[in-house]
Image (cartoon, rainbow, N blue to C red; front, side, top):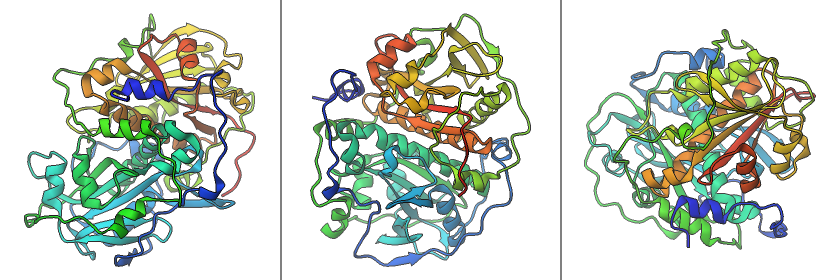
Length: 500
């Protein structure tokens, strides 16, 4: 029985000598896109790309505590396109701007429209394939969303973006472990939207501690197959909104859209952890510094160099469109400047001020395994993105050990460095209950997508890895029994970057 984050993580851990065989059921491969047979559709206008900006110039901007106060349908179209869009095609798979484990893309986006010029108020589903909106509910539901988001003082929201996960899309391949990837992939999308709102000058309010059941009811999804995992509100000009009347359930044709194959295997571990995650707990005390809770500490720290400017080419839009998971690494070192540029980019993202009342990124500690970086000793480091410093925990040659605990993926052996996201599971459960697992995985995916874009800007390869021998990784890094490695990204020079 799954009752905690630790229970789920342990139950879905991979062990080298205890891996059962698994064959993909191609006759029940999940659909890549969610379709609604009913409901009026709105074809969004073609969005003009943003001005020529680099990633560095965007992240280096002053914090957006306020911004544009009006939102038009053209701007909403542009925001959705920048946040999540199709980029190319590999066989029958449509690749997208946000990274996804196994290119399975389990996440869907819904839009609450409260005050968008040129678009009727309502709740919509974003059809990524046709760049359109399907109206699920007409009317203004801003008051309902305020209450479900636990916003004490009604905020001047003009629109909301709800990010869900369809469990079977990932479970088709990853089975009970799939909930990890649903959350990581949602974090990747969140990162793109944070970047897009900064480019467009909109202040945002992120909500992770919302009422799951209320949003499931509002959006008309099947909670046994799909769950809401994150919400981003766009702030604008205050407006008078009518009080929301009784919200009736949507018909079965809407809830049926959460099913993506004729026959879908279900996993009790996913159902149980998602149910446990629905309970919201606010910590009564400040979060523990996770870096102090891993069981390993650097004796000294050194500052992260401020490297400016960030590469001017390719620009921001090209980075989003060209982002790929590339793992054809070659045995060449990463320069110290390249590494520090990536750390600078992560630091800017980490300190974004539009956090919810609780800084959920504090659920994580970031580490670095150096395989081949100029002037840095090989070994394991911790990274403090608040104080902009890095500390060597232990000097050790990799000798292919990281690739080995990443399910023996030999293509990773030549990665110059590995950025690692870790947490203390006991602390997560203590401060947040099982929902803390959702926060930690979303944050890991969010910062991971930033690394993908930063690597793209520098012409480097980058590949996220969530499939690891969990206990083997913990022992190799020297973490205590309560701590785990959640996610890592390999970065470094690659053979060549294919054209888009």
